[in-house]
Length: 85
Image (tube, rainbow, N blue to C red):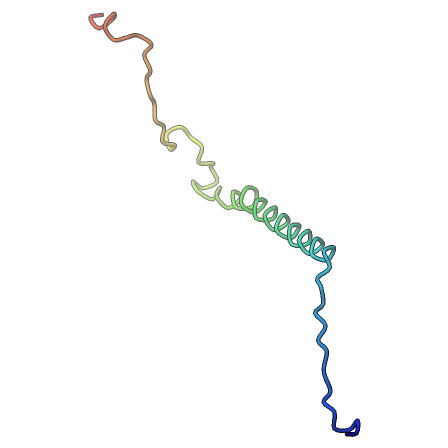
């Protein structure tokens, strides 16, 4: 047989992943997540409260009459000593 009719075999090389690229990719996405959480934190605690002050015609809604308060009274006695007083 001549060389024209021989089957050509294709060799597939499996490329191994480089561990340093895997680490770099992990660090990249970790920093993206940290920056995104930082931006969301900034918006939640500094930007959104600016829009909350629109209640009460310019007055801040921090008066004691508007805020609900739960008061709990705690006695240190056993209950038998000072019941009659």
